Image (cartoon, rainbow, N blue to C red; front, side, top):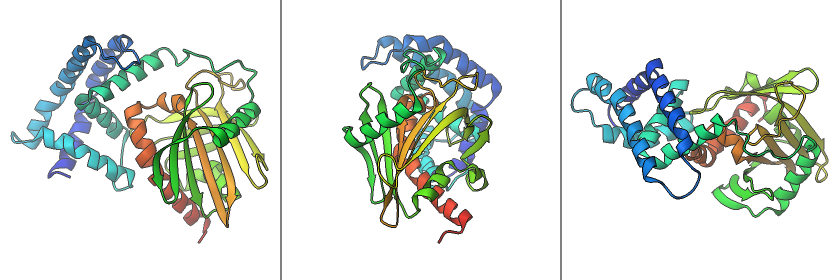
Length: 330
């Protein structure tokens, strides 16, 4: 990283987390997000709005950074050093706060029009309540979702996003047109240990990122906090099947519940997770499947791609190591 980066980053976090700046930026995004459309054509109006956004961010940063860092501070060099900092965070080499994520969002939007456009589209989607299209009626059951997921896992046209010796990340389009991510990784853990690592209620004792709490009436509360993303909490209902689709497998599906705490939320972008644990040799093959609209409800695409292909792989590897240490597994 450039000399003085840590100090400059701290100044940025402080400047961009001020309530008056956040309110001004939120008002600007809310006022202008409806103009943007999810197509390849970029209207001239988009550029004008982006320039206004840059001006707001620049006004908030320039004077403060120069005052703190001196008149010779190199803003270009600082921005070029940001990706290296993100990699250090992904590897666990840096601690993050909510202000860190907010700063990353603003800086990426500041330097990249495509990042800015994704942020505006996300704001537009959230403003509409994420309900542009229903995923079907309430008669769609978790059991049917599980069967559809297994069929797609086996028959989908998956294209590779990232491949490591122990893990592969892929993407495919479901029969209903939903972009879906699949991470398949080899683990020395037995299938039951993989399940406990992923959804055990004791996870809070060894994992800082995710907690699972059992609630009455077969409900669970999932709390998730990853770098650069807002904290997510949702009540879900699980379906876990053993011996499906093959002997020795453990397959799961969970989906968010509506505010009544009973009805499955079938709206587009709601929290939903799916996966299969297969026995493999003396260990397991863990296959985690996530729907892109569900993930994009909380984070723009430009950051999601980095999260999937870089941070997630390192996170899974560290998660396994922490679980083994907590459980005394050699």
